[in-house]
Amino acid sequence: MTSTAPPSPSSSPEPIPAGPSHTSDRVELAPGAAPDDNRFVNADLLPVPLARRVWTTYNFTALWVGMAHNIPSWLLASGLVALGMDWKQAVFTIALANLIVLGPMLLTGHAGPKYGIPFPVLARASFGLRGANLPALIRAAVACAWFGIQTWIGGVGIFTLLGKVFGGWAEASGIGGQPWTLWLCFVLFWALELAIIYRGMDALRRFENWAAPFVIVGAVVLLVWVAVKAGGFGPLLDQPSELGWGKDFWPVFFPSLMGMIAFWATLSLNIPDFTRFGAGQRAQIRGQSLGLPTTMTLFALLSVLVTSGSQAVYGKAVWDPVELVAHTDNVFGLLYALVTVLVATISVNIAANVVSPAYDLANLAPKLISFRTGALITGVVGVVIMPWKLTETPELYIFTWLGLVGGLLGTVAGILIADYWIVRRTVLDLADLYRPGGRYWYTGGWNWRAVTAFAVGGVLAIGGSHSKPGEGPFPSDGVIPFLKPLADYGWAVGLAASLLVYVALMAGFTTERRSGPAAR
Image (cartoon, rainbow, N blue to C red; front, top):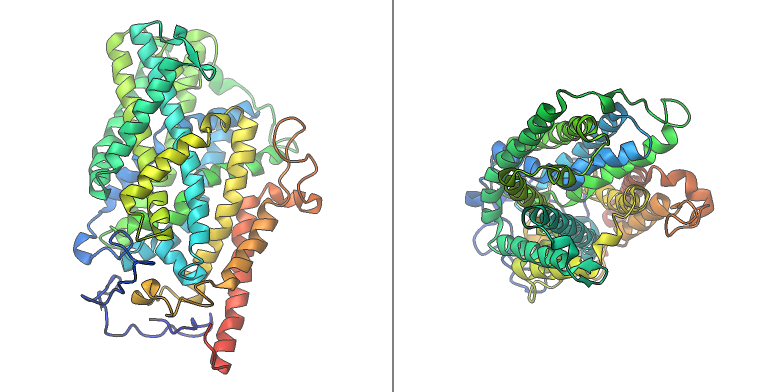
């Protein structure tokens, strides 16, 4: 385990003492070794016992297939095409983004199988036992917003398809500018999601295991159906790019790439929430590598092919799969599509957007908030933020929302990676992650070095945020004008800057600890 002062990058990690039981790559707390201070401990935050770390390569692959196959993922390619890219540029951008984000995903995911800890507990090593609430609450806020977005999109899909089956739904009396039947679909879908996650992580694993192949079959059925009606694919695949590959392309490509990275940047932080159940490093590495980049790329290509067929059949490109299915009068096909939309949206939403804030909120007040209570809070906040406003235009969705989120989350990822891999060389004191006054207590439970690195990285990442006149909340010349050139690279800037600043500050901290008597 590490000493109170973590080893400098040039030093060797300290050996793990004989307290916890451990294998070559997995560590477990010895019976009775966990502190019982309920300010920092509850049953959901404690390390998963080795006997319960059973997720296999298939489980992780199925998790990603289930999360990636959803309506917002389908619409990513359409958003890029709407910005002027052709289908090849859109698929390339999505594929590259997911290969890039896979790196920090695997690096932060390493602590899960090894120590059995969730993301907010891992963050205690760098931010301190109390300071970890800062990145945890940022992650929770983002997840709550995503939960609301996904639930709204799922509710709209159900509303559209049921309206096609029964008729007259769109003509129902309005509430808040929308038919009451749409609000009913939204609320029922919201309640169904919370009912599933309330049953716990084992229920989630079982759900993802069968949801993944079901959704794949549904997407392939949609492709075959459109291909048969179109007599083949063609018009959209032949459309040239409005941007070309020259000077007009790159100003759109880089912020779009950061937006696509930001789509899963949330999971690059809290992936230990899932990998903590992994049977070993091989399972999480293979499962994520097979599940994330390949699935997202193929799904983007599938959306392009299906939309191409819709252009041939209906004379216009129909990017929304729900709207496309609604063109058919086959009741069985509509009901099958309805179930597919339900399964696809639930599989991503409860995995990507409820699990994390449930743990994050439990970390805030372990005595009062359990995993299940945190999930219920997430559901309420996800409605209150009015998510339908965030997806009104591609500019707002990709550049403002995803870009801003990506910059902040990249900053946190840089600190976690720097602390776990460079400063500590993957060696943690498992019991002290739960013990006030221990190695990760720093100053009153806060590590000001991590907070400083977060502030510096965050300002550089999002300080230059800008919007076109009338199309966003930021001034056109940037919040901090001289940082405007960095805004298009927010995730990468935030990650790199916070990583470098944190390593530099912790190197000084290590030197101070070795030369002086006071503990921080």
